Length: 217
Ligand code: AMP
Image (cartoon, rainbow, N blue to C red; front, side, top):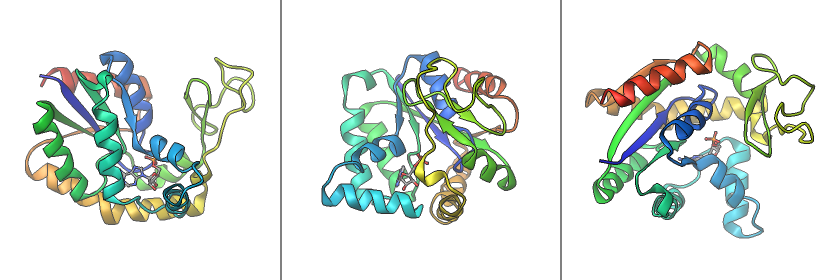
């Protein structure tokens, strides 16, 4: 049965980094709702403006919009064997959508929670820099590029700093996480569905641990 691998965790826990590695390992596409919404936010439409404002404020985009995004993306042919969700679900309503979707698509949901202390999250998010070409994720504190602000693999590319990765918005995003997304952890834990991984070590060892968990299922 195809799998839907779901990365759960606060902003900065390392969901995106791990989702990238897992996508390569399993040959599944990585579906980052934050990334899809950032692209949608560039449109000069009322929906584009709304998403832009919500992202800038560190608040969640509506469940209805997410339903459309997830339905249309996961019905693409590259998702037929399975896919990795990075940033979805983030509310209890979205969790219910996911259950419904998995049932309809005949897929098994595997949830992996990456845990990092609250103190570490701020530095991990504000220090984050991304390569616009290969999407490699760096961190100026923990994983700096070899040369200042350019990707190791694409020296021509200046690294990008997400507009919502500033301390003020990160504080709002962490508060949103506590209010809307943390309840999911209890919801999944109660059903024994959640596998938890310590997100403190290096990305490679965490990735190996996650692969072990997923293949053991
Ligand atoms: P991320 O890249 O996952 O940190 O997401 C960046 C921003 O996109 C979030 O702060 C939200 O504004 C929005 N977003 C991403 N995924 C979701 C989701 N599943 N539900 C609602 N809003 C989302």
